Every structure is written in C-alpha cells, then in structure tokens.
Length: 130
Image (cartoon, rainbow, N blue to C red; front, side, top):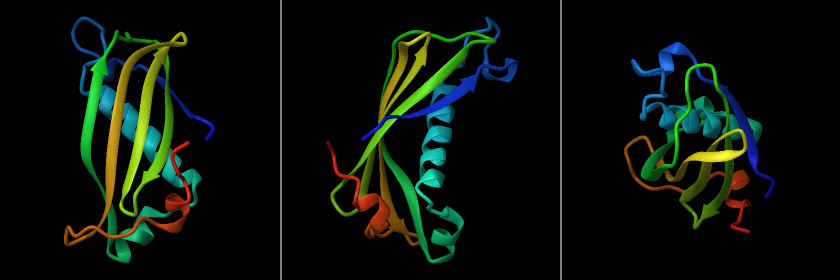
C-alpha cells in the first residue's frame, strides 16, 4: 500500500508557551490524517452513522521522538490495513524535514452505535496487511 501523506502547518494555537507543539496536538494531527483517508476511500461516515455504524479508537501506542515548533511544516505519513473483520490499524508517523518526531499505532474498531462490534465496510476489509 502506498503511504498516505497529510501536510500540517504548526499554528500558534498548536503550541505551548515555549512555542513547541503541545503533546496532545499530535493526536489531533493523526486524527485529521485518518479522516482524510476515510474520505479518500469514499466512505461517508455520516451515512454510516445514520445506518447505525461508527468507528471507535480502541488502542493508541505513541512515541514522542522530537518536537515541532511554531511555523514548522510537518507531514503525517500513514499506512493502514484491515486486521480481521472488525479492526482497522493505522501506522502513523509525523515527520519534520523528513525525520520522524512522533510515531503512533492506532487501532479503530467498527461498531454499532450501541457499542457492539460489527464488520468493517467492504472497502476497508479489502485492505490487507502487506
């Protein structure tokens, strides 16, 4: 699978008093990248929700390797694959000047709005781990 790339500019609102990206904002950046992937796959999450199906993050493993600062242009690089009938796994790296500054492995589960596991959409189940 070709890695998905999502550019991000670090704004003042993203930083702490020292002008360094606040640690929790990396989770926001990778969430935005995942949302872009869903959209690019042609999956309308509003339609899914109306049909009673949603995605929920069940696990996040994160490593902070460096930091970005106000004005930096960073990139979220993501690979993803279906893991079984219910789980969708994302390996995500935030890069600054081509070097990793944050890495995360995120697992999402497909479930009903009542919280019961359900099968991933066919478009996602077709994405097998390389």
